[in-house]
Image (tube, rainbow over all chains, first blue to last red; front, side, top):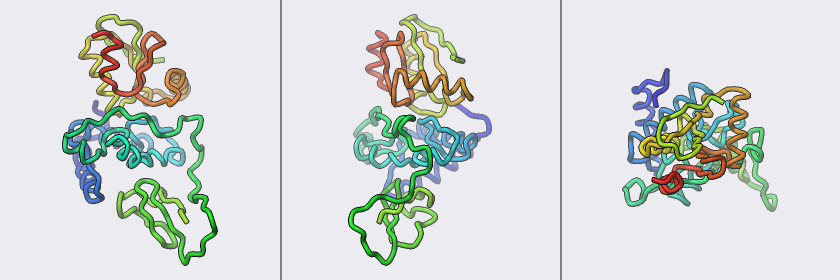
Length: 171
Length: 93
């Protein structure tokens, strides 16, 4: 499938960047490069029509605040990698899948159905137990779980490269 | 709703709800083509406004998760995701 306005050179460029970022962070790209490039094409198409890189395998609403959880890499990638050896799209895969020892299975969507979804951007705090006195707040990356203690979350997650808006207050 | 028809052997009313950008949707469509089954498909992401809302509601009726691909055979049998074996068995080839 090709889309108007998404050139093959755009696809190749983003493919190389995301693959490198994935590998730098200890993640693996699906070795089937045709399949993977097709997903990258979908991400670029979504960026073009919605203004953000929504998951190509889920239906985006067009409202970024409602879809933060499915901006690629999505909030569900890491749990799906752990449980199934691939993300929902099979763009990111486990070592076993990357090395061809295992095939990515069909994965049931972890995202809550439309009726149960929060209509607004998540509140960036997590309920905690006892009140703790810390010199700095602790922020958690919702995508990869990276934690850091600083006044504000970083602009870009140093591990998985998602933006600041994917962080939540953890402690 | 604007569905597209693909000619082939009649195995009942086979409808594929898909997204134009989704890898597994593409694989499912390709499998149906390879099997030579007649089917209708719709790319829900390419629909707009109330037509898209209606399509989503219809998908949710068969698959409460509202995920893609959702394959519906004779309004009864529903296969969610690219499940090659199940699709082959359901469509008898």
